[in-house]
Length: 323
Image (cartoon, rainbow, N blue to C red; front, side, top):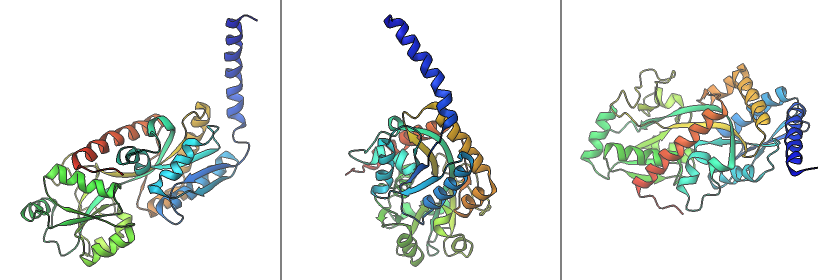
């Protein structure tokens, strides 16, 4: 057979096999890697998603917790897995948008290593202060920080995290000087925020616990998103409070290894959309302080691209030295 005909036959065979492969997928259990420990928001969302996708796919979706290194160990395992649709991952803004720019030796290139499937859930950050801080609005907080350079501090759940660089982004946009105090997780950070050992924390509503804000123990000054949130309708957005351009959103999304077949990605996207639309999944998402955020693979890819560009600039202006 001539070389040209062999190529044509091979292409035709691939076109015929692909639909058959998609129709038979999945023929065995699917692994969903959650790159964080059991019990947290990522784990709860991942398990709820796995349960609903199991129903739609007709095969069990098994959650595997692969924690460590800020989620990059689990994400890295997904990047290195066979691209056959049987290993998936729960990606986050930290693992996909920030890890490539806050680490001296990034474990992967998010845009080259993964095939985005769909966003699952998202939530804007809040700027919350201890009740002893003499500022009742964002403008008052900025004025206070400028009058006391270096005397206010903000907590985070660790160096190089979304909480950390939210504070750095805030400093850059407002021109204030604040001290970063890193903690090993949100629990100890919240304890010290309530005790007044730190004055400011940027995080999602679930981390602060709604009752602490409603009781006045932790006043929320602004929402770092495009719209106010239903649970706190009186809290303005950053733009409404006088700081346009400051938007920070935590999100979760389903990813696969980069070379996963497009037919499989399309099937998975449909299953995620169906899962996120279910009342059971929406209840879990809401309980964790998030909103349903299903998307197309292309939309999810663009979100990752924008986050990488955004945080690369924030890291650069902050002077952060990656390890």
